[in-house]
Length: 148
Image (tube, rainbow, N blue to C red; front, side, top):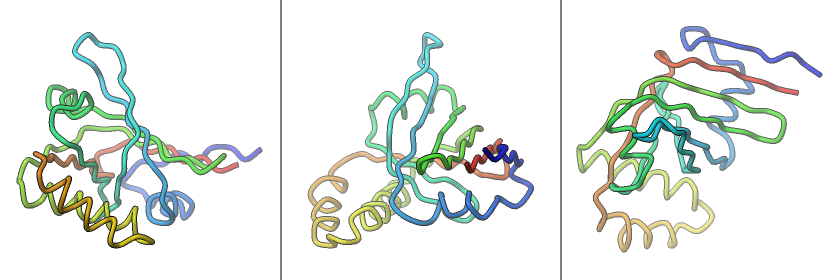
């Protein structure tokens, strides 16, 4: 079994780590901290953009509420025995146009094979919701990549 490669964000991400961020339709498992100190996990869409992991949610859910109170996050993106773990502080993006643009881009990515469905979701669901985005810069994150 190969040994895990650890990297800090100021170093180049291994090719396999870049693939996990950019190729295919993987989901991210997010871990945040509840007000009582207990962990909370959720699964979400994500995208990699300009050295950042971008997340988006409808307001009022547990994980966005947690991140507004405490911006620390840990997330994992996996593909079988290959996985990438990233942790660090997020930046909250409340700008309506940006948050709506982020979720629209993710919907189009995750439903690329059904573009009509993506546009319907954007128009009938997401545009009617108060959305918020979160950005996790890889430059301020701790990265761990493992490939078996």
